Image (cartoon, rainbow, N blue to C red; front, side):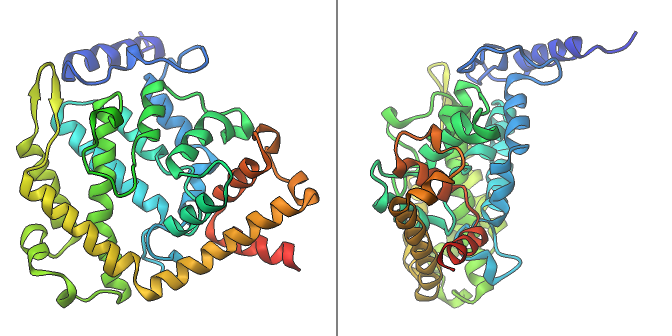
Length: 342
């Protein structure tokens, strides 16, 4: 007798109920903004992941800057490779904590879909220009809700959407206050994984690019985190495991006070020595200027505004400009500016 798809899904859900911790998100309780028939091949969170990785927004991450311009080196991390690293860390943590790996994977894969080209310099520029303000986490949610799939949106589960929106709070605390917590532990795991990923790996890019040398790294950083991205990642993951515990029918995720202090120190070090490095800022500020010129051109030209895809889904010309610009890759933004200026 063949193993029918609906039977396979039932078997998977039963296994999920038996194997995951009681405080883990369960796919059978997941809900979407719009009712639709469920897949007989995948759980709700697997379906979220399936939709995200097949979207054009996801594919464009391969050509968006992470911390250092990918156009200056083939081995520098892009927004896509960063996303994959966040996913890998998130899945590892969920497996160790008996949480739902599929939900964490979907949140991780979707968390930066709305990020601008040219990294956080691009994001800050668009935020300074946009009438409504701009943040990549809110834009990522707008992508999956409204803009993806030609304006249909992906209709993801509420848990995935919430995790995407709450994955970041700039330079806020690693573990947020209660009011900022995601509704799922898997969402919190992705937030932590995002921070672990860039703390572990952005230094690696800076060393390879010659922005930093080993002698520039403070002794206290080397002592706690080691010399490689793998050792830095493992130090943070191991500390999180050692200091987290089930409490009151949930899981209390925590770093030791010492690790928390050193993670903040490492963030400050990277911010000063890497993200604000003169050569890096020159690259990123050139990109931010590209964004500014495109935005102002759209705001000034009704003809250009009229050609924007999906502009009918925006509440204002400013939002339409943000939708269009944040979806660009670094290379497309540069080429588009040349085109409209020619």
